[in-house]
Amino acid sequence: MNPIPMNILRLSLVLLLPGCMLPGCGDESESREGTLVTQDESTPEDETHILPGTQLADPPQFEKEFVINFGFLRNAGGERLDETPYVFAGAESFVLEDYAKQLQREAKILEGNHVDVRDVDVIIRVDQEVSEEEVDRLIQQAKDVGFQKFQLKTVSPETGQDD
Image 1 (cartoon, helix red, strand yellow):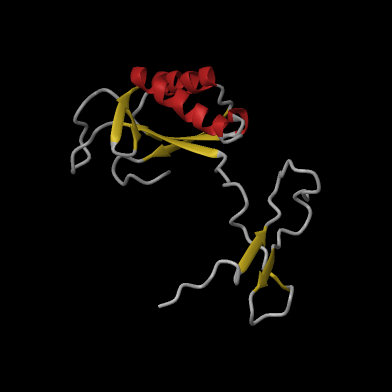
Image 2 (cartoon, rainbow, N blue to C red):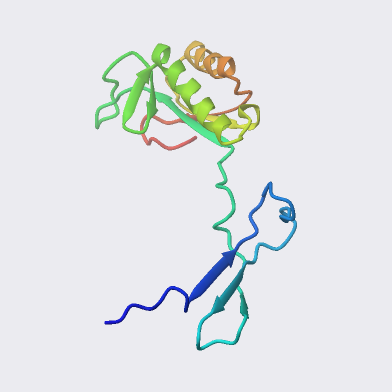
């Protein structure tokens, strides 16, 4: 098998990316189509193909909401296993005093992705049996990190559904 000589096939791809800092780059209002220029022995000297616009070049979009689940550990029958309310984050659970570090981490991640934490809606899904004082402490922890917008949704211990 003879390898294809490198000088026979030349392929160039130019994409206009949003926020490009180079002179002559387009801004976000311009087309994001690319130009593909190919040249080999079977095509004319300079054949140009217009590529369709794509969202692959767009920066990722982050949700401007952050959900916190706050409640009690319960058995299959819905009975409390512990009197301490926990914040549930994925497979982990935290007592309120230990959750402040997680809130700081979440805020740093959002800020690192150019999301202002003051604009993020914090949705707190709270067990109906959690005291108002505990909910107020959770909200204060979130305010200390910079979150400012809150929504409370109560969760029925029997069904686990929002009320």
